Length: 119
Image (cartoon, rainbow, N blue to C red; front, side, top):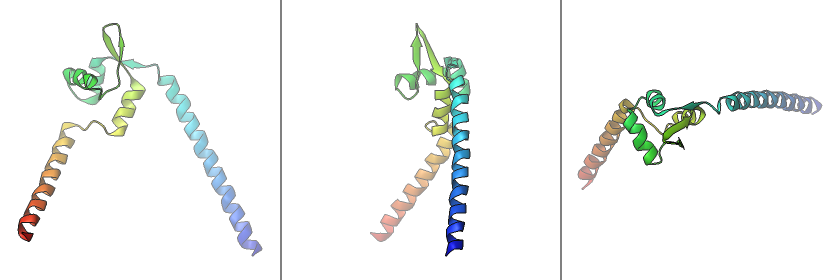
């Protein structure tokens, strides 16, 4: 019985150590990102980063699909927000959209055939 309690205590200490390590990594990442938070991009840079046309950037800002800020008559974007936008997967490259559309159509056709078969 004493041995299993000692093993449990050892495991708990090991978990605490791992949690402390993860906490320090997160804090380091946050401090590094806060240094980048002031970096801004213009429309041309965002279009290049996202692999879309400049007009598409304007369209997405108008539709509130991209976070942007106006400074005078210029649109500015925070790089950190663009990185988060990309990481969130809210924007699919055209090749990915084509694949997703084809998968949807295949699934829809299979469901339609199944319905006809059962009717």
